[in-house]
Length: 305
Image (tube, rainbow, N blue to C red; front, side, top):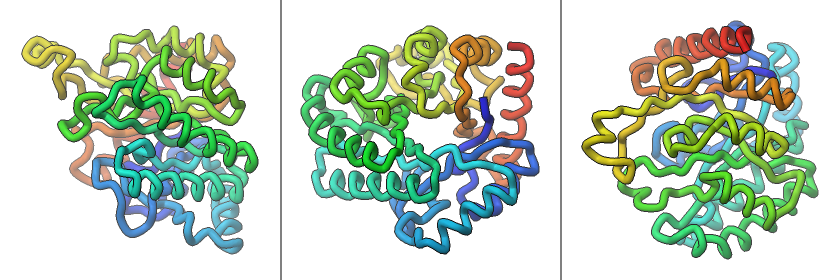
């Protein structure tokens, strides 16, 4: 596997600064955030623009390609994670339009991967979201196919705050839903940006999922999570904020077993550390150290696997 990290954790740095940092720390790749420039979603780690796809002319495409060669760090995928199934049609149209722009940018840059969310109307059931899912995503996947870009859907439920209650803002939460998604849109260009942390706190076997769905992995995220038993006791699993995102090694995932599973299925794709650990948010240097510490832990786990 090729190890990288997600650029969202370093929003104040330029793309070149992040590529230089990644090169210095020995990373192979980088997932680059492509939210619309000049604003966007205000939730944590969203709204970050390291490539402005609206300004991606021929000169800028070449500059980005040259930087990758210079720093010997590849871009593993372009990331943009809105809610395309929001019941607000005006917002949904904006999100889908920008998803298509990011797909086009991925094709222009020769990357071939775009990572995002399916989205969801959190006030409705999975069943009631299904027709909107098909109506929205069938044309998007056809658009991606024409440009030979693979779409990696992250499996985060997006159920962390009251504004995401009760269903969460992403449909692609579990193996049952994934099977149905891929049966509905059977395309080689439609797969998963697999994150084991979101399965762990749902009580889903994240190792078994690697064996069952590795052929649909477009990209992989590495993030840990730590369940707080006292908060589970007080709130139950139907409540909120009883688990916390952590960097690898500070949560409940066995990363040696995770790396073993990726080896077992012969996964040779990109794996990017996604830092969302509040313990490391106080400064730029703390966030850089979170990336370094994560890499050390995953490198050791991969050696033991």
